Image (cartoon, rainbow, N blue to C red; front, side, top):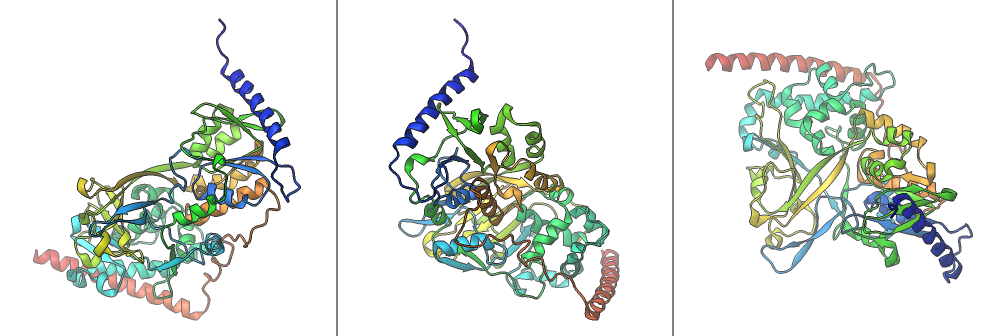
Length: 527
């Protein structure tokens, strides 16, 4: 007997599916106000980008299907039931904070306002614990900054504080078109400007590594400084004394916006636990999607709302050389999140407990400027900081990302796995190149990896993909890119006051450097 031809089997199934599509179109009794031809659209991936695309197309006449390989919709937006430790019942908690604000999340913020979902204001705090708790501080207040009183007498601690002020004042100059080193990585910039290791290891690297969930060494050598400064400036992290951003969270958990998007979508168009094997271009510009659980569906348009490496895997052997070249540039890193109540993962001193707590297990470098060993880093979110949580009922609610060891087994309520984009210099170049493949072969791409890797970037890219599929698509609010919506304006510093401040910074820096060297020499002599 002749062997089966897999390609022919797919085409045979495709032809049958296309006939079914035509029969459905002829017999459908649904009335559409949209007079444009009805399209079958597949959205692959139900993270924030896929959900944004689905919501944007919700009011059109098109038949839109959402495919998700996991057993839930939402991607990184995952709300679970926490078994209360000191009270009956459960409490809905997000695995991590899904934060947003009006200034740098304009589209997502407008979307939440449009849904009229209740929100809570939240103050974001950051703390650090190093060397198994021997060095700790928190950003909550001046008192928690000096959680450990001995730091009041630490020259290197004051050098760290001074470098924070110096960095916050001078970093925005990188945004000038005349800046001579636009291709500097973070490591290049820190070395060029003589920032202390105390600043780097006890503040700067922990902060940046926490933002993008990156390995510190890769963060230093792969991320361009100009990209980092744009983000820090827009999020008011460079404000030493000015106003900080007002952050919000969705009351009751971020899954409430997921539920609002899915509400009203026919159940037969929502496909959980369904893996798309590949995409095959067929006659008339249509696309065939075979699934791992058998069966093939045909679509007129496809929105790939996955990470780039996953999108390339799904394109399979049918990917063009250009698609392989561009999508193959993007990388991701894996992380594990553990939901638990083991307070040993919080800073040793309760005074230093913050919303986000950075840990590593190397020396703190407060007493020595020797180069550190490669750190083992984890980030712990204290979910009790969320408004409305009562730890007297829930007990400690903690999520630790990439723990160095597992919490006590009796405290664990869930283990979750995620992928995060690595937005290095190569990825930024590829982001610009993406326009060369967007919409080609009737395939669009969406994801936070097309921006800065955050919720706003993912949501906006999903909306833009939907507009690619449906040109002229109108939404109930304006879609604004925070980088173009005024956030980047005002960094230029003019006037004699700034020149005087620069001179003062240089002068104080010289005094501090001299004081640090003298005090170190004195203590060494006494030792």
